[in-house]
Length: 89
Image 1: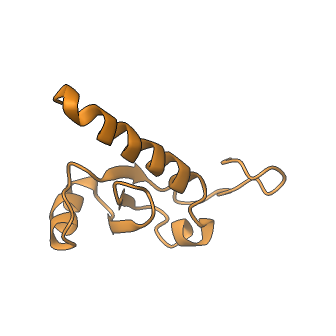
Image 2: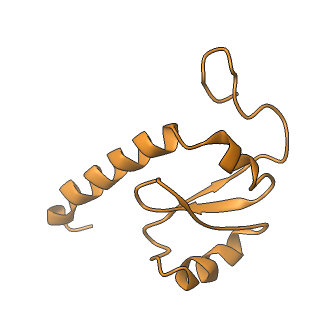
C-alpha cells in the first residue's frame, strides 16, 4: 500500500471497528453458519454465503470491491451476545 493511502485506510478501519462493534446481533443471527462480507466501513453486510469462496462473486455483483470488504465467519449456534455486559461470547 502506498504511504499516501495510509490515512484513508486507517480512517476506514476506524469506521469499520466502530460500526462492527454496534452491528445488530439480530442481523448477524440471520447469517448463522455463513461467511459474510461487510462493507468497508462495517455499516452493512454486502453478501453472505456458506462457503467463503463464493463471496468474491457475490460482492462484485453487489457493486463492491472484494478487496475492500471485510470477511467474517458467523457461528452456527451458541450465545451471540453476553447480555450482562454486551460483549461477544
